[in-house]
Image (cartoon, rainbow over all chains, first blue to last red; front, top):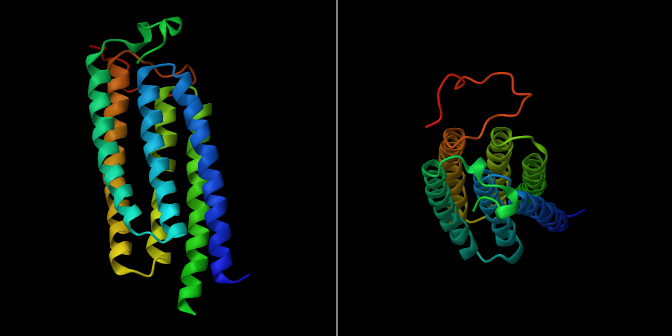
Length: 104
Length: 113
């Protein structure tokens, strides 16, 4: 197998695996049960988006996409910090019952 | 010749990183409480994204792209533990408790706010 073909197959495999990972994290995002669980799921989704953009950078050869991934790093970190501070100010996210729509 | 080797290595890193990300997502789904989920998502997720960015740096054959990818790795490695620590602390202080199978809880004697 030539190097180009191997890289192409690897890119496709990585895209498939990352897509499955996104679906699994979305299940956790919808299921909750607490607010920190959802914040963590969003953080993980940001990580997966960075990975997906990285694979797409190789796949398309558009180098500018990598800048978007870097910006997503920054925004994701600040968003996680802000949401964690918000969870800290809310008392006892467990007192929110699941039937009232969960924490959010 | 050397570029072929870089491409083979980059392909391996891509699949490796995607597998780590998938395992992190599985841990996020299967682990019993927020603290073990943080453990899965932060460590395995960091390694997954790091491997993918490393593959981009290897396979791009462009110094500016490679440097940006390495900078991204450094940023992820620096910020991910901070976010995880802050999130775990927020979860504990807002009333979440570890599951029953947890062995050590060093914050046990501290009252939640």
